[in-house]
Length: 255
Image (cartoon, rainbow, N blue to C red; front, side):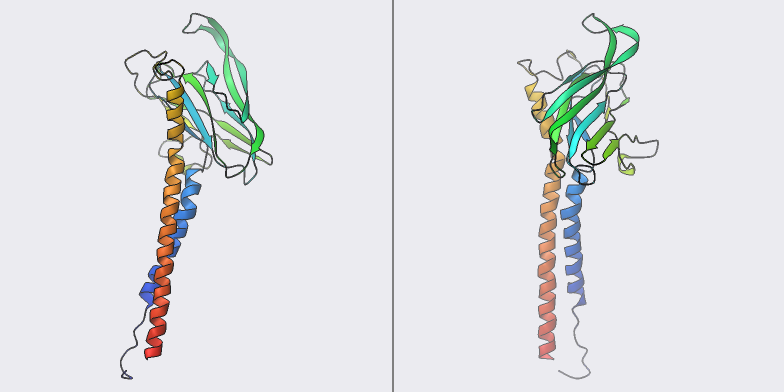
């Protein structure tokens, strides 16, 4: 090779390899974290006046500490709550007095409402493991367009997290450190609200709760897909970087 001929460099492939490795690492690590960053809620219905099963998913503890209980505050607009039994948790409904007695849809007088539902883990839920708890409520008939907030206190063996932040004007959930689960009520739908959202053809609600569990798992599936994509990109980056090193080494020997 002529002494004046510039020696080829291979910085670009090496840089591309490093970028690919970094991107893969971010996808593999960041996606699962984003998928389980907070307590999320999935409703079977959001229509005003409908019965809906709200499924709440939790996939992490408090800075690594296992979860021992989840306490849900029920919005004042909701009077009755029917928790779904979960064999991993005990359930306690705590009542709160109503300022003024009301008549429910069955014609019964109510002087108190369910103010809090507490799920206590029979065995603490380890950090990094996911579980879902759910309960049925009837959304207010006159709440179209309203956001119902369900603040959650996550208590762990060490510490607790209060999922109580609510987005203000101009904010999104991503701007909040500890966002509370919320349900935005939509327009009422035609049909029998008493059973439409929560009951299947047999009247037992199994189908809708299964659908809620499926929807609640969608985020986890997305996280896994992105994680796999990250591993693939990272592997490609390693191959590119190795090829660049071999090419550079061969060029030096030929020189």
